[in-house]
Length: 137
Image (cartoon, rainbow, N blue to C red; front, side, top):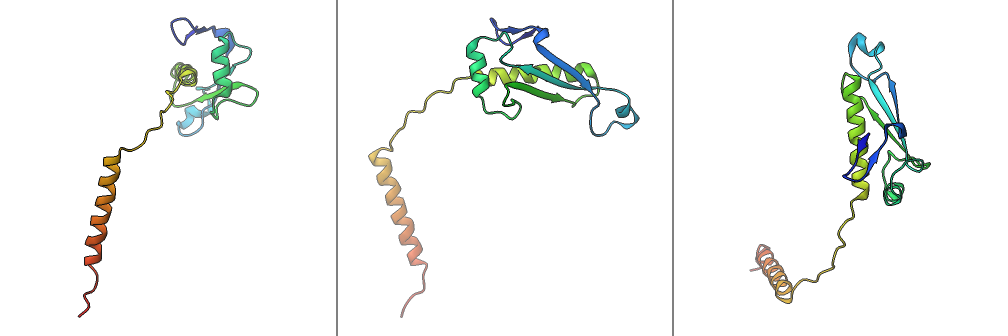
């Protein structure tokens, strides 16, 4: 059971975990032990509330396929259990990130005095730079 929030949980039956051989360094062990985890989670077939499903399907993330399946590969650790926990944690964070509603930005305008100060400083800089030029005799 993967707990997303106080009210939302995902049963283990909806999360498909396959153990595969990890890439990279690991010595002789890398050829014998399947320690990496390949996690697949079908958003549309899940028991998530519709709000979560909609937000996930519209979320722009490369881990979500066009079919609405979340694919996460975890191979950072040497043990299956660590990689399994890492993959589940990353799934939880992905779902939480998709459901965060950003605050709408209110467009603002600079004040008249700040505009005047900016233009005055530009004029001052311009005069200073013009004085650096060659002097005509």
